[in-house]
Amino acid sequence: MHPQHNEGRRRARAIAILKKIKDDPQSVCFVDAAQYGRSSHYAVVAIDNRGHIISSASVTGTTSSKAEQVAIALALLDDKRTQIYSDSRSAVRAFASGSIAKEAHDVLKNRTINMHTITWFPAHLGQNLDSLTNLNDIAHSQARVLTLRAGGEALSLCRVQEFRDTLFTFNEFTKHFYLERRVFPPPHKKLTRPQAMTLRMLQTNSYPNLAFMHCLFPSDFSSQCPRCRGTCDLEHMLWRCPSLRGDKDLTEQKWSSALKSSEYQHQIWAVQRACDAAVRLGLTVPTWERPAVSP
Image (tube, rainbow, N blue to C red; front, side):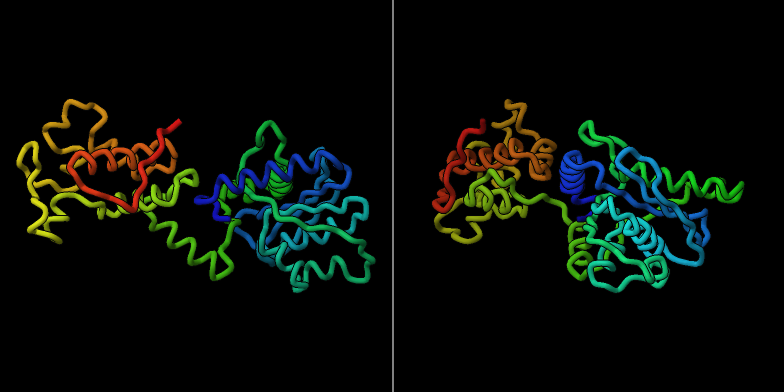
């Protein structure tokens, strides 16, 4: 889940996990790693459901992903806490695929490990989520505190920005780029298919209007507005016609905002406005049903 474009899904996942672990708090363990300044050294911690450190260690000459794997390996040594949560997707995938780093393997070597469940937890969501304590954020804070004990150099560099949500799969890369370029949101799930089609045509400026229909059928349609005799393109039909200026709701700014909004009320308003304008000008749109009045 993308940290910017899927913030709602990430937050919902985090809240669901935090509510779930309340049923068996004694089996929960959150892990994290923090970098010593700009070096290749990391402090790793595992905390319990109260935010207390269970185990910690320092890893030298490594990467963030490998350090996170070491943190998970430390948590695996605790047979009582079988539910392990980490905000590093690469570390979780490494254990899922059985291809962990050497540093993590050294921690587990010659040890008998009981059954554990390793789950990814979304990072960078703040200390409180829906009145629930974010244990992942506490784990990160505990790891950060350990790096501050290294002295002045680590203290001066402790605010280096970390990028934990690295893109891994082909789907994640392609989704990142098309979401970055997207200008208009998709139709709201409450819109019917005809209404969603109407919204998409409005967003792409391809909704039927007199000027457009005149280009296709010059003998059947006139490009002139029947009210002001101006060229009746889509913008004119919706808000530029002088006969519509008495309605304060008909402004270019509001129309643009509605097309770029992901809210149902705004999208249904735009669809309703276009449908009313088409009917007023005698344009038939038989493939679109009239939108229901918004609740």
